[in-house]
Image (cartoon, rainbow, N blue to C red; front, side, top):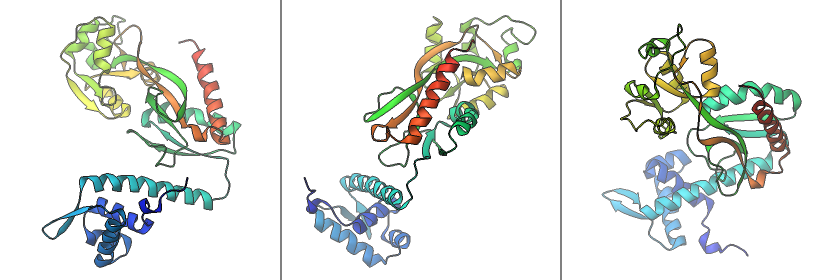
Length: 309
């Protein structure tokens, strides 16, 4: 069914609307797009007439977008981004060896990247473009073929490969651990409840991590204190400098423990809710580079699952 033309404004008008929504004034919009203020105003007026709705109201001498118009501008921004990406793909030579991969910063740098040389030797035809993401991403509006995601494999319109669960261990610098009666000279470990008396390091993507850990160890929910960080890499540095106890995934904790920089404060690791996944849109499932990467990654995960801990 053809799209009704009455609902599809010109891309020029949509660019003006999207830019005005970001920058807030006709002057700034004109400067960004190389248009005069009067040309910007004409485009906005034409857009209102085309859609048959009021998009703006005046506050003094300034135009202000209505709430509905701001939502429309956000939709227009995504549509224009998709058109731009489609145009770049159309003009680019056919390339079955490029993979745009979004990664979690610490997991990507500490777990994935050290393993990539093996993949590069097996698949020299594939070129990676890596970008880091802490927040949610959108396959529809971003030029991403696949992403490393932590949580659940419940995104609509996607497929996923489970990489690993998150198994954690509380660790601290030797100086801080000594206050609990443990240290390099002793193998004694503190009662889990004793950890609640120390400053704890939290990560904002796992707000329930410490409460879950205490519950798994049958410790009544303590009043938690400490500092909040946005990445595990900063938590590791904070722990190394004795700022608190870090609840680290094993892939991060084990190298620091082996080097003696951090000490474990529990005898056995604890499995937490959620897992790491490779996620990709269903529409990209047949992409040769993506298929090669996920098949290799599945083999790596299977092999490492069989290694003794």
